[in-house]
Length: 185
Length: 185
DNA sequence: CAATTTCTAGAACGACTGTTCCATGAAGTC
DNA sequence: GACTTCATGGAACAGTCGTTCTAGAAATTG
Image 1 (cartoon, rainbow over the protein chains, first blue to last red):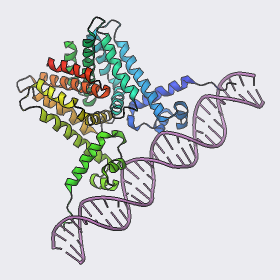
Image 2 (cartoon, chains in turn blue, green, red, purple):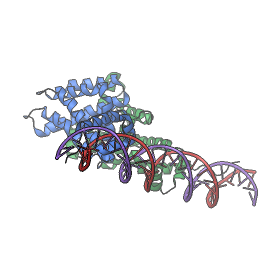
Image 3 (cartoon, each protein chain N blue to C red):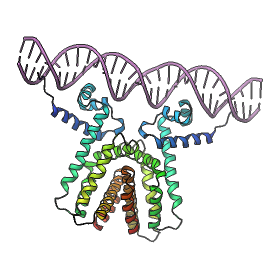
């Protein structure tokens, strides 16, 4: 009955390599052929593993989101408060090794704003992931409305600072502002 | 000697229409043909007026940046302080009529992060425009470092809130957070 | 061994891309 | 009128795109 078994590990390895490639390329210019060339396989192989290009991009974004959440989640301790969680998130983001990933994140985010149907899941989930973490960091005793307002504000501020940092590269000015903000929490 | 004079007004009208079209489309998918069809002209006409596609996109972004700056500049009074200027900027941005333009702004911004050479001017200027306005709103007596830090922080926060608003559409939550922030200034 | 399924590659297809060429009409000066 | 420059459109170019087809190698079961 059964023939050659499906190699899920290989697909996962290809996907990881594809995400790495995506962080170094312009997202809008990703194509079957460019990814295939970077991974050393044929376009047919990618089609076989991922189906359509749209499905492959969705898989890449899912994997990207996993990286973003897993990376920042591990840094915040179990019972950290709002200020500690916010600082951990900023420290993680400001590391230059995260920049390619974060640049890809903002590129996709911006594109999703103009075509929400295409990357609807990405847009929706990434928005709530960090906010939920910061809301939880305030403990269960805080008024829900206040907690939500605070979380929204902290995420917005840190994201805006991150955008500034990535765009300008002016580490001194942005880190100065970030430090002043984090200290005020 | 001289033949038919160059019609600069017509070029400007075409450019304005092209920007309008760009706000309603996905930026990365703009093409000679799509713009030409939307404007009711041939691609040859566009080529004649703008040269290459890259040059046309640069012209569109220049015009877009003019709109963004002119629109928000007029709202802030002559001698407004930091809090007033920040509130004026937020009120202008949160208006749903600005959303298509702002979505295009963030889409280009995200793309420029990944290919800084392509839209270098856009990335550099837009970053400093609003920050400079908010730095000036603090008056000449404030310590320059403090003024720069404050301006960076306000721009980051409002931009982050705006990104949240455009992505989630959750006006109640974001406006609530924005109001709390603006009141604290 | 045969049978079956996965995996991979190469070639090709139609659609779309930016750009160029050619031809024609429009608006000026002489 | 002739002449020159700008304006416009249609056709065609080579290149890239996502996708499909065909075919063979690899890995499993019986």
